[in-house]
Length: 623
Image (cartoon, rainbow, N blue to C red; front, side, top):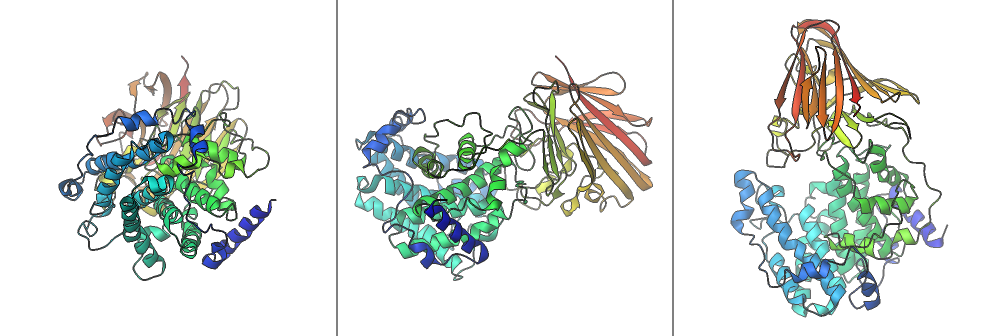
């Protein structure tokens, strides 16, 4: 091991065993002057080399097309739109259009170096610094930030701070002294002073400082990155590094020990992606002496994208995720190299390019830890299954070069997860590259989404998931509503998972005495998934199960339905042990992120029962 790697490991051990490494321990590793990510515009050789990268070829033209174009207006009325209507999108769309010009103009100027983007960039910076608050309206429900009563830090403001600090570092005195002072003053007022007041206990900390979800990593990355790029005092910068090492442990605690991210793949890219950027920023700032990617509880989450993928690039849309969610390809490449995961067919891809955000772009475009740290031999990849035993989630895949045409994701878990949906017992079936039976994923966020009315939504409550409805009732919310693993049996040919999901219904259906759901995935032939629900009541009650699709469906004879989407078809054979049943579909009419509304295909026993077994056998229909 290199000397710097050894020192980094020692420091990480110190951080893991105490509240935080002492700032004095960190200070000696930092440069005398602040330094951001990437190379300053004065390093012409470095920037000239980037002009040949495909990811930068169009940047100058894009920026040139915006020269002289007025900024979208971000009025007070627009900010108040959320508090009045619950709509998040209108303000956020305008804010993104304004703030995105900071990175675009900065990179274009660094590439071209003719000075023609500076005037427009300074206008954007001045406009952003004149905003009442950098905090999203959705994160300022009381309007305390809008009214100037407090200065909080959120996902948006921390990003703006890091973006401005990076722009100033890259351009230096190409920006006017007035603009540089404006950036300094706003970073101090909106980011540094509030943050240090929280860390020191002088004011109440924002909730994200100790949370276990994506907010922690995103905000810490923005604040710490801005500080390392902008604050003159080395001792003060050291405090930010020490605090990041301490508080980021909360984020890592949000993953199960097997690396499962209950927020879903999209939020993995956002949250863990920012943790990687935070770690990389500190690694670069300390010359590799502090390596926050070394710990065992970082490696497991890093492998989540390859472990959660079902097949054909498709991953389950559990929690607030998109059906089309894919892990950031650049991040997957980066982590594949960083850990020698060996699961990336494009491992030699040129990562350089403008990603829309300056810090991320600089990490991927210039020398970083992946070019300095050598890892061991490549891993073999996830294989035919991934069993997240701590999370109760099973991914089943075909054998390589087999005739099996389907893969599945099976979910236990509980109903108090990050970005939770009431979905204990849910599943996804992928045929080829198409999720035919789905979890429909997230709705378009509004004020309802993160409120006491969250589970009014038909895609967030259990109506929008392929799970039972018991005595006419949906699943309840809370950690007590869980899928308890009764049995597992994994072989080369088949995987079986038995879940007791009674606790997800029993408070609302007290006569329910048993509800076991058995999944059996077979790799033989073209493959199949069998879902068996064994239910019992102390008093007769109704029972219904369901399929969810974004495609179409039709009856096939008396005891089967055909579900089709994207040119793929699945046959679902229904066996109720002789009990009469009906099949009826309904569209789930919510504002979803999918191209079509989800369809719930309800399969309901016609008479109340005290005991029943309902079996669905799902097989692919070959073309």
